[in-house]
Image 1: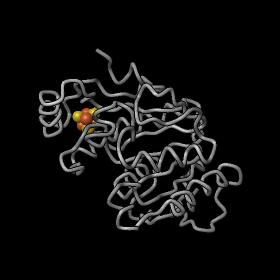
Image 2 (image 1 turned 120 degrees about the vertical axis):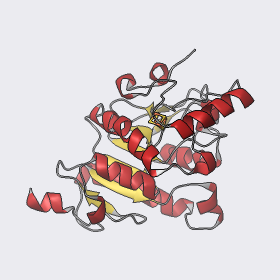
Image 3 (image 1 turned 45 degrees about the vertical axis):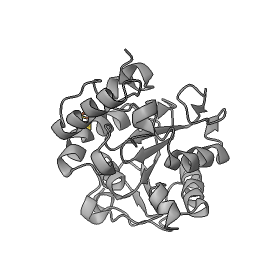
Length: 237
Ligand code: SF4
């Protein structure tokens, strides 16, 4: 049986297939395994380029998406916009077909999640986010070429900010907000590309694409303070 490390471009940063750290999520995982034995039903590994300059941090696997297919954002509504946007900015090679076996490759980008296991109702609890933080930290540590992080939604924003050594209180979440860590890595945040946010028009494709356009620009030119609230840690540096 495949493990998360088997599928990952950064295997040393992955959780065990039966990671026991979050009892509520383990119970839900076991329930899903019983109900849908052909699904992935395990911590979802990173997907993308191990030499990425851009890391995208999502919230957690969707039940019919990553939890089913074993690849982030693959097979659910949110993935349609994310993968279309990655293609638009030249960050993928191949055609996304909502299946882990579609042959799609990411070039210069990698997708991570703040929480690797499916949470009931898409809502991880604070303790679960804290438990899984070590894998996000390990992932970013295994990706030394990442210069820009795009966080999707507030939970991913806070998790990514902590991983970058930014103080959450000084790093408020907003769509298109931009913060710079002490080491120069840039955190860009976006409303999550969830079905809810798109259906309610909180986020549309143009707003989402603008974040990625800025990521491409920031990679080359760095943060110019145009949107940014510079973290107090940088001011001290
Ligand atoms: S969410 Fe993360 S820490 Fe919790 S059980 Fe899954 S892999 Fe382990």
